[in-house]
Amino acid sequence: MGRHGGVALLSGEMTYMPNEPEDIGDYELEERQALRRVAGLSTELEDVTEVEYRQLRLERVVLIGVWTSGTSFDAENSLQELKLLAETAGSEVLEGLIQRRDRPDPATYIGSGKAIELRDIVASTGADTVICDGELTPGQLRQLEEVVKVKVIDRTALILDIFAQHAKSREGKAQVELAQLSYLLPRLRGWGGNLSRQVGGRAAGGVGIGGRGPGETKIELDRRRIRERMAKLRRQIKEMSTARDTKRHSRRRREVPAVAIAGYTNAGKSSLLNRLTGAGVLVEDALFATLDPTVRRARTPEGRLFTLADTVGFVRHLPHQLVEAFRSTLEEVGDADLILHVVDGSHPDPESQLAAVREVFAEIEGARDIPEIVVINKADAASREVIDRLTMRERHSIVVSARTGQGITELMDLIEQELPHLDHEVHVLIPYDRGDLVARAHKEGEVLSVDHTGDGTILHARVPSTLHHELDRVAKPVETV
Image (cartoon, rainbow, N blue to C red; front, side):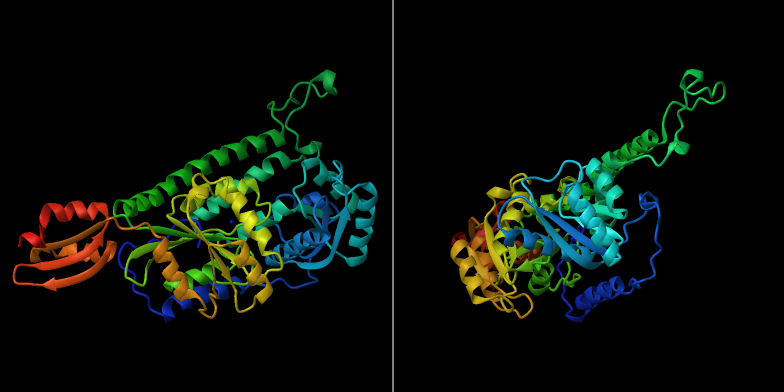
């Protein structure tokens, strides 16, 4: 799960200037790539707990995964995705290891013997971080770190760090911080007795009068402050989501259909939005390149208005903290009339991407009941065998390339077919002083013909219910004129 945080809406008609939106995305990409890490300049730490509260800065890493089910291809594919995540976070991957086990070891995730082997590999490669392809318990994290003697993080912490790097909007930053605090809370640990603020009397060590603390240890104080901060963030996110709800309800009142672009991270959702609407959002070949949702107006080939909402990308085992924190953003999917489910046709296992996204859909109220078009993207880079396999499996699908424009016209035609139908066909005479109704028919409906006469404008169109009621009140049926 980016386009992320507060939702960018255009209240009026959007005028697309080809150079300007592309410049915006190019500028964001240039800004993101302006700061780069220099290898070999890191400071070695004797005590790995010194970096506990620092912002995660991965450099030279070793990956470790536990293969508990499925095929070896599935396990290797999962580790390849972890490699892409690590590189997106700004690290250099030195080694990748997979261990076959029935289930992860409850103490050290990979077992004590393998942990010692991992320690030797870390020492020989000069790595300063180990990344585990799974979510570790606080105990596993601490014990594995004690063995390998370098910083250990899990898949969840890695994804949260990428989100923290890429969040730009106020709401996006608040959502990421809430998810980070939810993850950190059970993993807090003390760094020594000198930070304790609770001391007993003589029976507890003879400290005596003046040595008693305030009754709360440092770690308990930290936990309380984290809970208070989480409560504040939840209130802020709820307040910020009110603005998006208001805009969404405004579109509903005007019966503007909503289309949501959803899919696996790096499947090309932003590129597709840019191709369909000229939105100019940032495009980068990286996982979770954008987080903040973007909403843009678009028109079908027949001129019918609808909105396109780009949403945060999904990934296998998306941390539940992120699903909860970004729930208000994911509502764009649940409130849509149509979902464009974008999948990367050039990926070696696109079926697993489809399954992972649909798992998240299951957690969004109403999302499973919304019509879905599977958009197989990157057709210019995909093999014909994979394309044929996907189109056979997903009957309601279309093959496109957001980069070259292949299949985009056919996609727009398909969107028009799948949008909710306009139930009311009108043939009326509208007075010239109510030209706003004609304009609304062009915006909200499908105009079949317009004829200007001495008495007013004769309009033949298909319109939504709200506009039909207004026309009934103001206009005259053509047959009575």
